[in-house]
Length: 146
Image 1 (cartoon, rainbow, N blue to C red):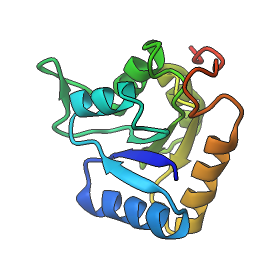
Image 2: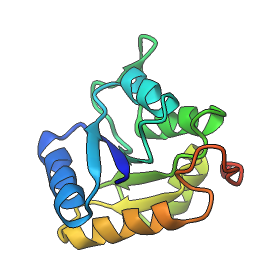
Image 3: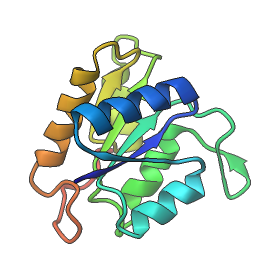
């Protein structure tokens, strides 16, 4: 059963993601409450995919504010965690944002919020986990997009 780390500052949205992925997707969900916690869990091999909000209120790393794009870069630049697929989620969806966010973060895919159909989320996560080299420690993934 895959472990999905949910990094979302809105408790209701995080709960929706967890319910959808646990019930319909048969996945375990972990909640990332801080950047340090996400990095520790990911480095420990406890995470198969990160579902990451782009705008993280009150998130910090080493004493400074951090957003989802920077947290994704930290994960993708770390040899111990770069194999972990990252799905960005944002309500700030404008023309060209998908490409810009993926390029700026190194994340693997993007999902526009709000997500009304839980099956859309489940299918996207399943598809990402099924990609060769993704979510599998020791399997070399392509370098992050820059």
